[in-house]
Length: 333
Image (cartoon, rainbow, N blue to C red; front, side):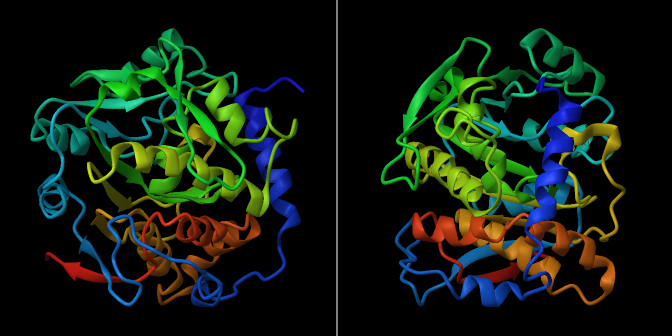
């Protein structure tokens, strides 16, 4: 089967039908299975990571959240976002990101090409999409334009190294600015997915993460989440304390921004912005907000998460010591 965007999304939809046991089990029950948890900055197990929160999704409050977590962001800064397929209806607003990027010195947006043969498959095509979607206000560095570089995975579940876009090594710090939403293969797309797949080179790295190089077939379910965690760990280890994570819980379709105009319309209302120096805490806080939402509009998104074994992202990060599931929400409103 030729790997096009349509077939890629179709495959993800089909494979997601085979994991429907345990639908609507509680997030806390799943998280209780986590063992050997330690935070990226060695927060004790009984301590809590700080996750800053605002209900207001605008440039002023996005910047305010960032200013609570940016003390270690120095040097040349990459801002990793998902720039989306052409005319994607749910992507972060370029106007919002422009205001944010303008106050981060020596920064550029960073992206990579896709594994599937679509509008962002080559650098030339990708740059046309960037223009179409309004990402013209600053440099956009396509990390794998000049190939890839291997980042080691320390004590990975499956991978010993991952091929990242070669330009990633040119950055001192990383801001992971994520449109949090569902995902056809990962269940949800948070900060882990944004770096794990989003920084991997379009051909080799993404092929490794999806299991095509190692297993010779597309991965699904819990094992795919473990490959995601392996790739994310390589990036976390590389940047150390010079990486921060922001999840924007806005227009949360069950589909990723890679689906483009075909993405399902969001059912969940916008919830706000979360920011932390702790990757696991910020992704778990976003998932918990969805699970704890007080009406049935959460059900489609929860079904998407659980039908793909998406909660394994959280326990895999914990086992990799990529953060702590214990956090406190600190409102800045």
